[in-house]
Image (cartoon, helix red, strand yellow):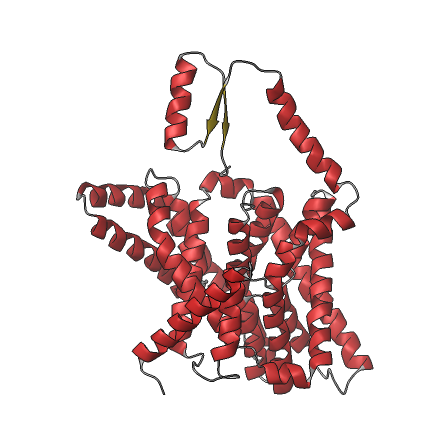
Length: 447
C-alpha cells in the first residue's frame, strides 16, 4: 500500500509521460490520461487503486470544469435555453429509458440465458445509458471553440438536464428494488429540497456575490482573491450536494452568477490551473475502471454492448434534436457529441449491481463497454465534421451560405476598421471609433 505522497507521485509521473506521448502522436491529452489510468489501474499494473480519496479529488476536476462553463453563461442566457434544457433534455432522458426498457424486455424474452433481466433492471440500465460524460464532452467542445455553436448549446442543455435527472434516478432505482419504499414521498421531498436550494442560489446569490467580491477586491490581495474563489466554488458545490443534487450543478450555478459580475475574466484565468490538473486526475480514474482482461475474454459481447447502445443513443438524440427544430447537420452533431456513456452512468450501473438488479458479471461487461465508449469520444469528435458531411447532403451548402451571408454584409463596405479581438481593449477601441463615426467590424473567437 502506497502513502499519499507516493500515490500522488505515481499519478503525476504517469500523467506527464502519458500526455507527452500522446502530444507527440498529435492526439488529445485526454486519451493520454485515460490510457495511463488503464495502465496503472488495479486491473493492469496495480500501481494505483480507485480509492475514495482519489475519486473525491477527481470529482473536484468536474466541479471546476462546470464552474468554468458556468462563467460562459448568465441567467438571461439560461432562460433563453429553457426549451432545450427542459424540452429536449427531458425528452432525451425519458425516451432513452423507455427504449432501453423495450429492448431489455425483448432480449430477456429471446436471449434469456445471456440477458435475464427484469423491467426494473432495464429501467436502471436505461437511466445509466441516458447519461453522457459532462466532463469529456464540455472539455472537447471548449477546445474546439464550439461551446456557443448551435449544436454546442443543445449539447450543453441536454447535459444540464441529465445532471438534474440523476437525483430522481438515484431515488427511483433503489425504490424499484425494494417495492415497499414510498417512491412518491421520496421524490417529492428531493424535489422540494432541490427547488428551494436552486431558488435560494439564483435569487440571493448574485447580489451577495457581487457585494462580497467588492469587499475582497478592495483588500488588493491576489492570495485572498484566489482563496475566495475556491471557497465560493466548493461552497456552492457543497450546498447542492447537501440538497441531494450533484456537486457539478452547484459549481455551474456559482460560475453563472459570477459571470454577471465585472470579475469574470480574472476569475476565469485564475481557475484554469486547478481545473486542468484535477480534470486530468478525473480522466485517469475513469481509465482505472477498465479491465482489459475482461474485455479480451468477452470481446464479442463487449463489442455488441459498445456499438449497439452508441448507435441507438446517437439515433435517438439526433431524431429528438430534429423534432425540436434543429437542422439535420446540427442534429447529427448533437447526437455524435452525446452518444457515449457518462460518469453518472457508472454510478447508476454500480448501484443496479449492488442492489442485485443486474448480474455482477454483466455489470462488469457493461462498465467496460461504457469506459470504451468514453475512450472513443475524442475520435468521434475529431471526425464529426467528416461524418456529418457524409450523412447530410446539404450540410456543406448550409455552411457555405452562412459564410456567404457574413461576407455579403461586409464586402460592400469601404474605409472601415477591422478590430481583431473584441475583449476589453477591442471594445474600448470600438467605442472611440463610434464617437468618431468610423465604421468597424470586430472579430473574436468568443461569441
